[in-house]
Length: 441
Ligand code: FES
Ligand SMILES: [Fe+2]
Image 1: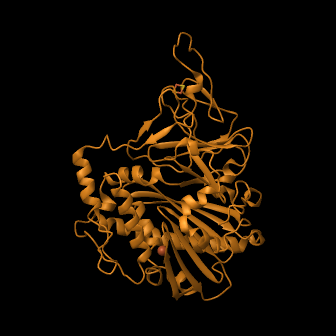
Image 2: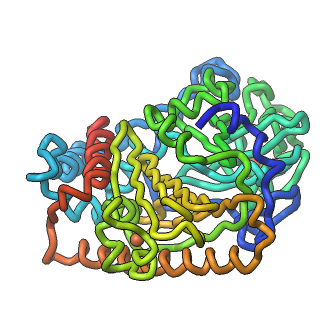
Image 3: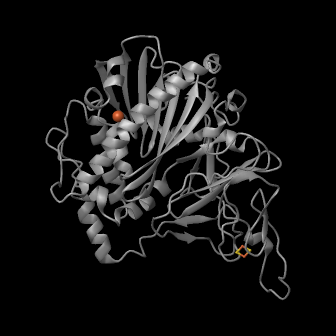
């Protein structure tokens, strides 16, 4: 993906929201009821702010500390994580144990070691296209605000008031000031503390030190990303740098998949799925193994003999030719999985992306964004037909994933095996997980 194609704002003019009622929030600067992507249950990070520095200074550091974890808990987690051996080749390997998908402590550990340390897609640039637009959301216990200030600059902040920790904003909308709904402390959209009433008598209080705590953000194509772990010195990083940092050596392979700036955003759909987030990812990463059995309609349009999988550093790419150039699938389908939880699917005139957000040990939210060749956006019948076909596949996958979660929770199951010729991307996913999960144990 070239930086030129995906520089911030380069796509915004191409966005169409013909099906805007399906969007989590609209592309225009007006209030909606959406609260963004949300999740409630995760662990406790330690927030370390360098002393004697303004809170919004470049010296801010986050440290995700294991200090709150008891030695007993650590050792339990360690034995769970080590119950999968990434050194064993796929032909001889067992899958991770069911505890990876069911143990109540593991999700908190995943948040700390994976989700809060990586680039995460949190929304679309069209949600904050205009000055003063904002949206909020959370990833585990991390609550964030993404907003565009009056000068047009995009920012990310922790959505935690510096007075007594209330969220300062909710949902999405348009505002010139972020005023905390509790006691009214207010912040400008560049995060600076603006004013508070009834502070007479306060000592050692420097307003400059009490701005909202910043988060590193970037844009990539139509997406807004954030990274909770990057030091603030990198806050002003070149937005294009996220390409390399996020996609690694998959950069050119993804670029060659004809993902371009001309696609229009058509719809967003969300699926609440009663399974661990990794079950949904595993289902995506089985190299089409389940397609002829579980998606008979979809399978009839694919040439499954041509299915291939390529494993890169932190991305795996599956591709498949189709049986006909007509219809929503076009000539070929390209499925890129960006570790740990983002999928880019390009087929025919369509691109859809899937973001898997962990909510609880056995619950995740999957957000689908659909983009289409602009020449077809007015073909309402084709659009509806395509979305309906896609919906059928998603609902089939939801049933599969929820069934697997139940099986993983059964005492009858502990570990499975891989089909080595097709499930290489899944094995790669599990190896990356094991590596990250072990990193702080
Ligand atoms: S908690 Fe925000 S003003 Fe008091
Ligand atoms: Fe599927």
